[in-house]
Image (tube, rainbow over all chains, first blue to last red; front, side, top):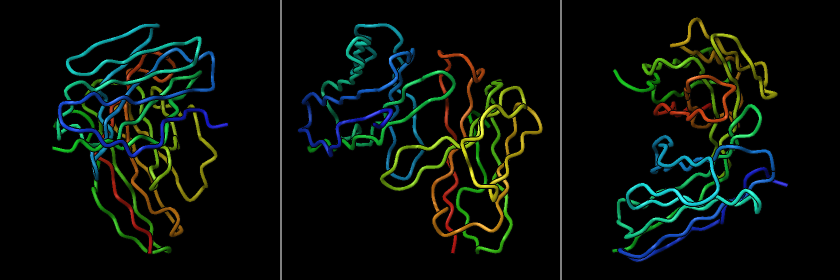
Length: 109
Length: 115
């Protein structure tokens, strides 16, 4: 079983719509969760971190965490063409950060 | 310079060459990491250094040799690589390695091609 799994995508959404990205993880003891955005040919950029159950909002981004279900999600509201990128879910276990394979989002104008 | 910098940004080498990748962080962090990113695969952690001490070697072949002379600098020495080692090599840093709440920040990466 993969440590971190993301919906495979690619995900295509119209401009202005909500993009919903999902991530599940296998280590029940995981304590911290991160979303990175990676543009093509660039390195990952941290956009959200979440440590407690519930929602965390930052601008157009909302991260949701449910530790009981071992599930974390990222919502992008009012999607813009500049949001077109691959989004990586990362989960912190004992000593290391484990990454999912990423979900590629394309926002069409 | 700000954040995490890496040089060179692109590297093409033959299987018999020896080269080194350099990473420098300007964030005052104490932990540094090497990751490998291959196409269509998740980021793979290679090495972790915490306060200059190596704390993790994720079963990386010996043709990759890390060096961390201080908390701000990290090197990856490469020798007798294979074509399957072609990938994007990313350096990252965080405040310390063992805290669950540390955010990691990445450098721009080195795109390595092994011929």
